View 1 (spheres, one colour):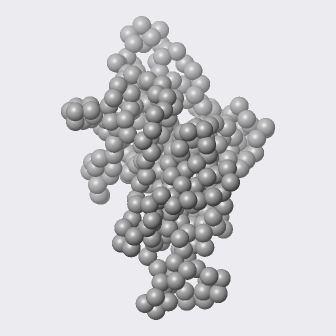
View 2 (cartoon, rainbow, N blue to C red):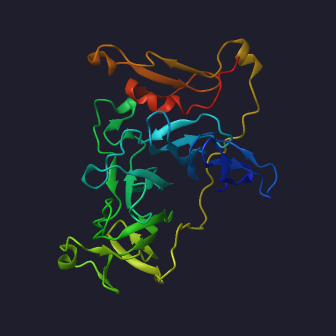
Length: 332
């Protein structure tokens, strides 16, 4: 992923206490000056650059009783890390089962395209959804400006395919990756596999009769490349699938407007520090209130470095999803 100033940002491995964890790094276009910009005991994955200049990525929060992958944003230098979407939206899979938010991409209208799938048992495939993160921080949780106005859902299916996020066969096949075409249409380049079943040594389609068999066995996926048009729900092949070949990630190379450039933070502004207006985190309550009726009325507010500006106001119970992930220290 190419960020401002022509510096690529990518995921690399760095050791934590138990296994290798993928962290986000930035380097110059010639491969020099590689340095880490995200810090997490678990994985940070799938970075992409938003039109705002911020980096959007999938973060695995696997500590303190949490085990989920949500969407986060930060500046390209690693500053202003914050939860972007989904900390309380994981039970939005098939039959309200748990899914993770993977491989996000910004769409031309500002909404996000994301793959949702469980941690395992679906051959790394899942369903494609469109998320209105302009107005929501969770599927039924609007931003502060929309409290009492919007109630959700923030997530809508990107396709008409009947995709299951449960283990076993998925009648509408499964998607592995998708990329929106920024050409004035609603088309997506997708990696998709049809539903296939094993009948002895023969691979066959997922007919209603075959799916009714309780002992049905799912065949290995067969991913090809397709153009899916969201405006009329049609799908056209681009590269036909081949047995034993998987198209894991798709990217579209085309001219597009440059995103806003967010230059690296050069350090603490001495004048602002002397005036006492550095980066701060103000919480009306960190752990809630003894009275359940009062807990929902308490808020946590994040202020940016420099002249304080409210970035996002969260209900008190959402703050727990943030406090383990804030990596920026407060200037002194």
